[in-house]
Image (tube, rainbow over the protein chains, first blue to last red):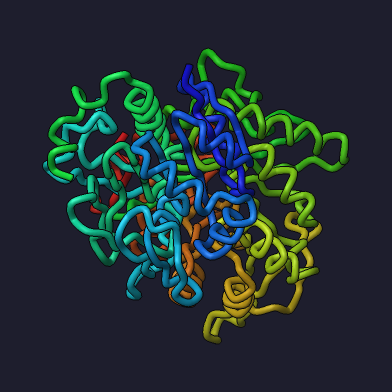
Length: 220
Length: 259
C-alpha cells in the first residue's frame, strides 16, 4: 500500500493541487508531519509564493532535513512551482539564501524586457532525451501549461526534461532519477495538467520504474 | 511563447448565472458550475465569477459554487464582487478560487491590496478599475476612477493611470481595466485607455468593457497591448464561441493556447 503524501506548509495552492490529484484518482494524505514524509512512498510538494517564506515554513515543520533525505533515498517526488524552486541549492529571491539542495543550481529572476510575473499559458518543449519519459506519456510536445512566476530554476542541462521561453529559455520540467518538478501549475493547466499528474502517479506507484524510464535514467 | 488569454466572465446572483447563455443546448444555462465546465471544454483560458449578490446569505452560496467548480474545472478561476476584507479573500481562495478581484473596496481602503498580497501573494490579487474619460474634447485624454458601477457610479477624482500604478506598488498582481464609456456598447475597447495602462504597469493587464466582435479583441490585444481579454455577452449570447474567437486571433498572429 503506497502513501502519497502532500505536504501542507500553508501553500495557497494546496487545496487545488489536492482536488486535481483526487480528480485523477490519487488517494492522497495531506500532512504536516515529517514522520509521515519519512515513511511515505510518494511525496508531493505544492507551492505558491516566495522561496524564502517556503523554506522558513518547511523548517518550522521540521521538513528541511527530512525532505532532502527522502529525495536522496530515491523514492518518487513531485515539486510544483515554488515546490520545484526550493529543491535547488540557492535562491536569489529577496537576497541570496540556501534552499534544500537536492538539485544543483540557483533560483534566478526572470530577465527584464517583459511583464513579470509571467502569468498565463506557455509551451513546454521536451528535451530529446526525455521526450518518451513516462511523465509526458500522451501529452504532445509543446503543449501549453499555466504559469505564474517571477523566478526560474537555473540548473544543469542533464536534469532539464522540458524548457519554456519567456525572455530566457528556462527549465520548466526537471527530472532527476525519480524526482520530477514543474515550474507551471499542473492543477490549473486543464487536460494536459491533469494528464501530467495522472502520469506522475502511475510512474511513481509503478513497481518497475526502470522499464518505463530506461533512457531517462541512463542520461541522468 | 506566452499566449494571450481569453477569459469569459459570468455574473452570478444567489448561485445562478444571470445573463443568458445561448450556446448551451443541453445544459442548465443558469448553473455556473455547468457553464464553467462548458467554457473549460470550449477552450477558455481562465474564468471569472462576478458575484452580484447583495446579502450575506447569498454570498455563502457563492462560496459553495466556487467549491463545486474547483472540484471539476482545472483552469484558473477568479472571483470578484463583494470582497471587502482579507477574510472575504480567504473564504474564496480556500473554496478554490485562484485569484480574487477587488474594485470599490480597494479604492476605499488601498491597504486591502497590500494586506491581501502579503497574506496570499500578489498572484492572488487582481485590481479591477472602472474608468471613464473626463477630459474635454480638445484636451489630451484623461480617465478617472469610478466606484459603485452602474447607475450608482461615483467619481473618486483618482487618475486611472496613477491608480493602476499605485495598485501595482501595493501588490496587485494583475490589473483589469474596464472602460465605462465603452461598456455595454459593443463597439470595441477604449484602446487609448488600455494602451496607457498596459505601458504604465509591470504586471499583466486585462481588457474589459465594450467588446462586440473578435476584431475588437484583436485590437485590444494588438493595439491596446492587453495581455488578456475579458468578455461576457459576446460568448453568453452565442454570437461567437471561444474556439471561433481563438481561431480568428491565431490567424491574425496573436499567440493562442492550443487545446
